[in-house]
Image (tube, rainbow, N blue to C red; front, side):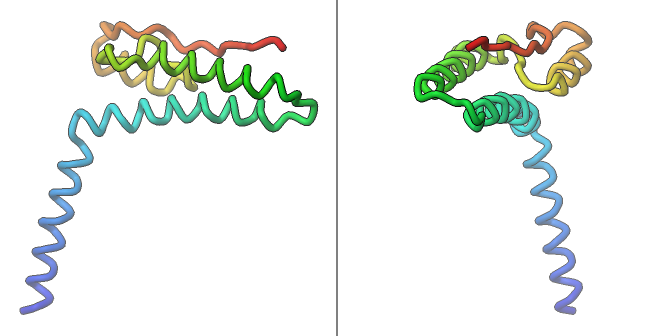
Length: 112
């Protein structure tokens, strides 16, 4: 009897977790999070360069800050531009039948 009770409880818990994770807000978060972390990864790689100068550190961090605050403004419902590898762009485009207001992904090259 106890095993059946535990199984039923586990199923209820699993169902609740699934419902929570598939809500619209979480769904968007997962894809935008991937996009943001791609930007962090690019900056991290720049900060690990062998020929890095102290002046470069501030510049790279400032550029990252500016990009994140302009593309992911708290005033906008969606990012103005997705800056990652394009996966979130494609998904949003598909979900909104091509009416997504974001721009295509671009890679910004910073020349030092």
